[in-house]
Amino acid sequence: MEIRKVKQSRINQVDFNNIQFGSLFSDHMFAMEYIDGEWQNHRIEPFGMIEVNPVSASLHYGQAIFEGMKAYRGIDGEIRIFRPEMNHRRLSASCERMCMPLVDEDTFINSIKELIRLDHQWVPPGEKQALYIRPIMFADEPQLDVRPADRYRYLVILSPVSGYFGGDFPAVSLKAEEKYTRAIQGGTGFAKAGGNYAATFLASKEGRENGYAQILWLDGVEHKYIEEVGQMNICFYLNNKLVTPELRGTILPGVTRDSVLRLVSDMGIKCEQRLVDIDEIIEGVRLNTLHEAFGCGTAAVITSVGSIGYRGTLHEINNGQSGQLSRDLYSSIVGIQRGEVKDSYGWTQVIPV
Ligand SMILES: *Cc1c(COP(=O)(O)O)cnc(C)c1O
Image (cartoon, rainbow, N blue to C red; front, side, top):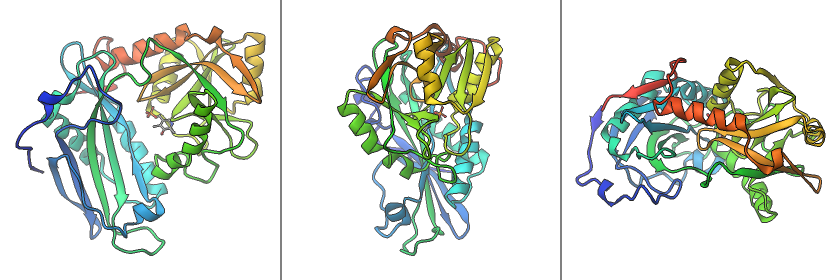
């Protein structure tokens, strides 16, 4: 792989105590192009502007996908990534759904490792901080036909980030969304496809205007079954069981979700993946059998849900506070990621620097 380094690193200008989510990027990026049926020109080069043909199908028809993961600075100073093979598997599912070429697992993981090895100083040291890793792929064929392109670009960029919501484990308010839909069976909900996110902006905007931090997505047919929360998977601690919506094509299969299910069942708590009716959850609030609710995803790990607004009524969960299970899961996952807790699942990989 060709490596073209920056003349002068920007790392000395960075104040890790003051970082805005997703606005700061490391010195380098990984790039390659898919031309004539294969990925070529694998390289690391200075992070910067790229030229894109205005005709590219990604700009017109949204043939674009991404991934999201993080590198963590451990208490021992080592840098770890978390279950990258899961992100690779999901990228492959996104590629297939969007008619895009696969990237093999070695290229996916090694490009990330090489890039982080070079930009290792950009992995921030704070307990709630990490280096966010964003692989993207998009169509880049100069041709306007409405069909899958035959040229693509793949990039990996790195962004140091701090805790997503700030504060000390806040519990957020959700709006159960009855007007808009995120995904529908047969659609692209299970893929990390760019267009899925653009389609949620209006709902989030209206939600925020009404004082809600995030949208609680309901199924697209009846607006009855709970699917996800914002860009996170959702879990309920209901009747001493962990209940989460089953993956049925409309839900993004989160790496954090999968890790939570594993940890929770190893705690001896029964887990159910099934349809979750919003009425069952509201009833759980009323009967006090809903102990906790939380979202899970790479960005914030675990986000407690303090209340759900549904049909004009605000239903408070656990007195609007984060619960013990949410906190324990947060500590376990972050502990494994930062090398504080023994990684008995083999989830982490140390990046040699
Ligand atoms: C990325 C994402 C998640 C969380 O997945 P993780 O792998 O845990 O980060 C959940 N829902 C949506 C819609 C997402 O885009």
